Length: 299
Image (cartoon, rainbow, N blue to C red; front, side):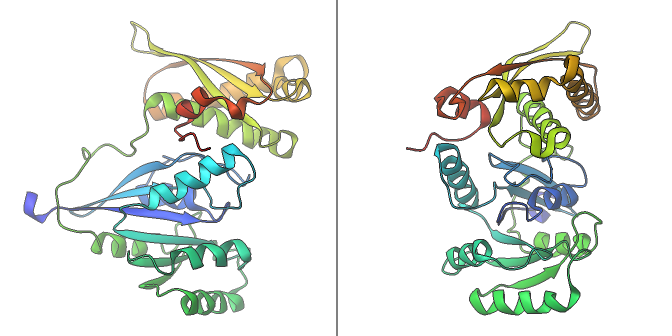
């Protein structure tokens, strides 16, 4: 049985908001990566584990690659390229609806001379201008020698099973790295911080700038099997704290309630989640926080 097993690494790369996390979730078959309409939602590299027949796919969901302006940006871009190291397949995900801007063509240029087999995945085809799809594919294939081009919608699942089968077929023979029931390499502590951050983004949209983070103060199991989690939402200014709290604390209660429900479901046990908001100017220059987020400190 061991000889029949295949296992390999697929690095999922692309510009911010291409739908990489949604695609990783679709390939795994359940939620492992947080998703929001806000660009640069994914900060650290995260591995989703998918099974296709006798093959285990290790899917690295990387942060979107963009022009970094500050330390946090540089750390995220470094994590993205770091996630691509040692991959058996590179999967470039492109927002087919958004078209080919300089971000996409620059990333394609960076992939051009890499030795790994490369697949082009045009995502969000359900929303894209059909006439432009083949044009996008043609232009990118002229730039990079892709093994294959895929037209998928990670949101609806269209084209995902065929893509999954092809990626599995490209993996080398070897034993599985994770137990069959494990869907991610993220710890429950890291998952809890990500779920709260997702709710922050989903509920506050444009009201809260990109400058916020979740710091886990404590994560402990109670005797009854439930989990008690205390988290700080870090923002840069008092006005942002007021936005997160909402009138009479209504907003933070709603963020907490939704995050708690989702975590209880993901962890399959009761979760007691306690949130508070802290104003911490320059939190993105705190070396310890980078460790918590799962990013390397980049000079």
